[in-house]
Image (tube, rainbow, N blue to C red; front, top):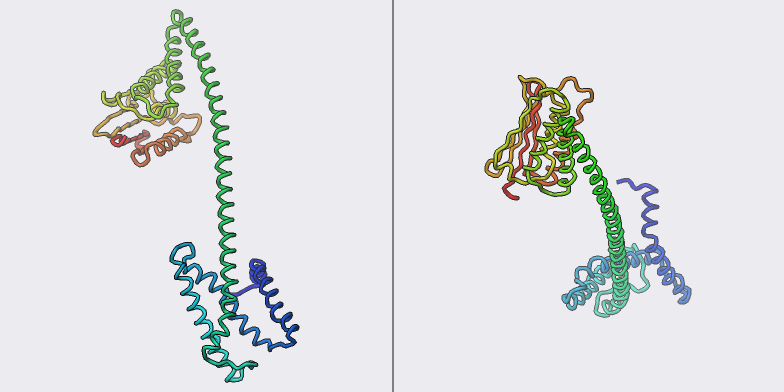
Length: 362
């Protein structure tokens, strides 16, 4: 892998504290103490020992301390054991390497390395010196990690508070909107009732249309807020919808609504049947006696099956965007999940919908 200049700069920027810290430490030990003692060693000697010292520092902090499980009781025996092993292995490796380099003339040491108890004891203080610094670094690192974790949790808590406040504000707004929606329809229904009373004797057909419209609107407003509603109420509104379209068109409409007695007692989410019925009136041709439309509901062994079929209206002024069917699919998915499915198909200029809901687990 090729290392670019930008990669090197980013690495130095990310670990600049480490480089600055080690630079100050090495400068103090080499330059300051060298001036005090008036004695300096070759550069290679310094590079050799500080390489092992720095390696020991990070190895102890990132491997030995976590392996000792510092936050458990096991650390009482694990940590001393690991430190003893660490000191012994470190001194053994450095003694062997310095002896090899000195014998072969690669490096010259003022005090030639030798193996013995005195050598191990003499070097132990230096190893423990770096181990103590490394342990302090481990705890400082842990402190900053825990502090960052606390800050993140506090940030999450504040975000939750802000979100709750937003939800509460939206709730208040929706409550006001709901109250307003209750007031406006109340006035509308009173007005429709007045018009119905006024026209019932003079134009009974218009009065029937107003009555059907009023019942449909009342159902849509009152029942839409419920999670489930009795199907019988919605089926009655579908019949009102058919009646209203027949009055409006002044023509015979060939459409039928059929359902079993068991269906009327079921409860499902509201306005599914109404939406499919409206879709038939909006996009279907219901004037052909040879191609009558139908809406059929059956209930067998916990499965509600709803089928519609109608001739496609080829004279539509606006193309179908299937918004109503898409809304039905989303509501079914949100409420019933995999227990509901809706399928559409076309055959010989006729459009068919099959909707199935498994109500066994309700």
